[in-house]
Every structure is written in structure tokens, then in C-alpha cells.
Image 1 (cartoon, rainbow, N blue to C red):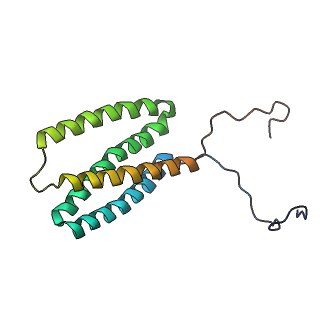
Image 2 (cartoon, rainbow, N blue to C red):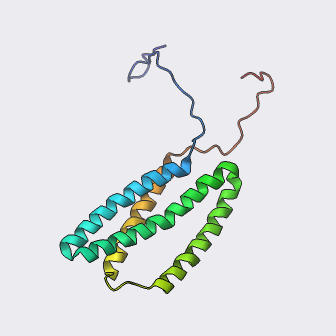
Image 3 (tube, rainbow, N blue to C red):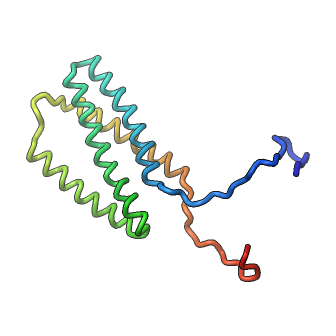
Length: 160
């Protein structure tokens, strides 16, 4: 049915689908966040290489990869736990966060900083990855449609 009441494209015979549940919110967020952080990592490492040396570029990349690993673990936990127990995903996020912080701190203290590491470039890569990862996650979450309430039951017409 076409209406001339408002300007715009005429309606056609195309299929209009209803939105349904998103199959994998967490994996989609992992994909777009990783892509954004990886792009920033390439740019930051390129700047480090041009302004300093190869060790600076590796330092920048190391900082970014550490951040990506840190955030990626949470999204994978959300994916695997959220499929079976959506209400328990937040609790697992908290538990995973504590384990990650303690685990990364222990590794950093035990391993220490290698001699070749450029601290400023390491931080620059990490900050670049954090900012772009979080921006991509916010963008991704803004596009997700989550059902908060159950659909109302139609008691008069159960087939509707």
C-alpha cells in the first residue's frame, strides 16, 4: 500500500522482517573492538617506528596487544557464560576481572620489563588500544537490541 500523505520512497512488496534475538552480542563486540584497536595499534606502531626505532614499535604493539588480550578475555567469558546463564554473566565478568588484574600483576612483577622496552611507547600503544576498544564497544552496545521485558501474552487470541 502506498500513501501520498508524506514524501519519501513509495512502499514496495519487499519483505519486512521483525527483529529477533541477537545470536552473539559478545563475539560481535569482540570483532569490532579488536578491529578498531588493531587499526590504532598499526598507526601507533608506525609512528613509533618513524619517530624512534623498531624496539619502540614493538613496545607500542606489546602494550596494545596486552590491552586487547585483557578486554578480549572478558568478552569471550561473556559469550560462553551468557549463552547458558545470561543472568550469571555479570558475576562472571566481575570474577574474571579480579583474576585478570591479579594474574597480569603477578606476571608483570615476576617477568619485569625487558631491556628493549620503551616505556613511553608501551603506554602510548596501550592507551591507544584502550580508547579505541572502548569507543568501539560503546558503539557496538548502542546498536544492540536486548529484550528487557517478556512479550505480553495475548489472552484473547493465543495465535497472535
